[in-house]
Amino acid sequence: MERKVRVRFAPSPTGPLHIGGVRTALYNYLFAKQSGGEFILRIEDTDSTRFVPGAEEYIIESFKWLGITFDEGVGIGGPFAPYRQSERRSVYKTYVDQLLESGHAYIAFDTPAELDAKRAEMPNFQYDASTRMMMRNSLTLTKEEVDQLVANGQQYVVRAKVEPNEDIEVNDLIRGKVVINSSVLDDKVLYKSADELPTYHLANIVDDHLMEISHVIRGEEWLPSAPLHVLLYRYFGWSDTMPQFAHLSLLLKPDGNGKLSKRDGDRLGFPVFPLNWKDSKTGELSSGYREAGYFPEAVVNFLALLGWNPGNDEELFSMDDLIKLFSIERCSKNGARFDYEKGKWFNHKYLLMKDNDEVARMMLPQLQAHNVEAPFEMVVKVAALMKDRVSFVKDLWEPCAFFFVAPVEYDEKTIKKRWKEDTPAQMRELVALLQGIDDFSIQKTEEVVMNWVTTNQYHLGNVMNAFRLTLVGEGKGPHIFEITDILGKEETIRRIERAVATIG
RNA sequence: GGCGAUGUAGUGUAGUGGCCUAGCACGCGACCCUCUCACGGUCGAGACUCGGGUUCGAUUCCCGGCACCGCUACCA
Image 1 (cartoon, rainbow, N blue to C red):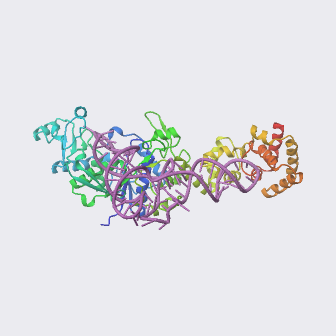
Image 2 (image 1 turned 90 degrees about the vertical axis):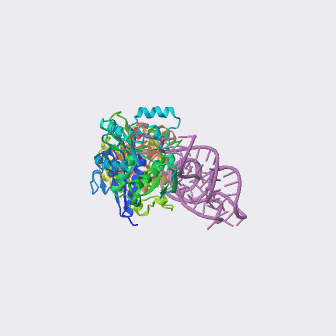
Image 3 (image 1 turned 60 degrees about the horizontal axis):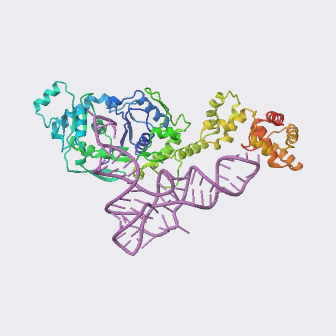
């Protein structure tokens, strides 16, 4: 049964896209691409009460940034349009009626208040075979009564009629065979008349079938309801083309118990979303990986390895590598704690792989923000010299600032340690020495200065660090002659003189 | 509570019925490099959830406990 691979990512537009959802989408994408299949974006907006404006656009923009592309779906179109469930009301209605007619579903009039009352009355109330005959529904009411209620505009829901005592098997690509007895399933609401929309379970099955989805790769939270989905395929007579299931483990918080949430990000200081998001109601801001300075390829690489690995010791993979190597079977069954430090390391690695020109270009806005104007060539040199020290481009300004802005203050501790009594005199000698160098290259300058230190038998560490202090303002930074090379002769001398004047 | 899933160092994971003195990476520590800081290199600390079984032998297979995660909505 060779079937064209067609997978989908089907988020609800209820807010920003959680990073766990991004991973699910990524795995779907990798799976589709490696088998030459199609990847579809379907928006599951069947809960009209939870709809959040802008969320759909956010989702689309997030994937665009990450380099995850869809072949069909919302914003793209395709042969199975529309891909937004709220626009598919009429198609679901047909299938709801089909279930009603075949007796696999029934109409229920119980109001939420009545259900709450029932739950309070019965400790472990569940709307199922054992209780449905106690409720107000088309199984307990006469046809006339039901028709009358519906005609009167009484709101109702359609529930699946799940027969008890059957072991239902779900063959999961990651977990193997999972068996759940139908008695523990409840008569799930499939459709609500209030907004004329189906619930997830119905819409999902109908759409996956109609859109010819071959594999359902989704989060583990769906595993308990997978048997119901299997049942639904059977009720519709679609068992032969039922997609294969793969339930992915969830992303857990870095510490403590529970799954990763926005709160953890806020608390521990890392993003949980791909892009910044501002809640239009509360005004609350959620930070995103893009704005935090991550490269999309680093996020993709990091996420891919969180719950999957190719079976060897390699860790750095491009999207193309991942498409070649990915396999559902190698997805881990256990939930992965989110390790933000490792994420930073990935970004560091990707920063190192970037061209110096590109890094320099990315630094420009920071320079502007600090009112710095510098020749591009100089910025490139600085980028080349300094990029291995940070994980993010935005962290580059601080350690690089001294290249562009001469120090006006000098680190006390370094002064104490390196600025000796004879240092000012040495520095004046150094100025004279540098003045005489015409070829201010790294090699030449180093040769001349080292010679001077040696012949005078100066303490190398003290001289060099005092020198560094005059240029940087503190006791750290790259090798001295890398710095003098970038600063140039004039500026180097100016800084030494100023330091001598200031520190004394 | 019920049902289901999962359980290798702090974290992500590899691996196998004996080759395991359990590998790799992040993080952590030390050392080396060195004019400082960082990078890099070397080394180190650190794990098979517990209890039963099966077996000549179990981290690996089975059962149970425990832990943890998920579901248990007219949310997805």
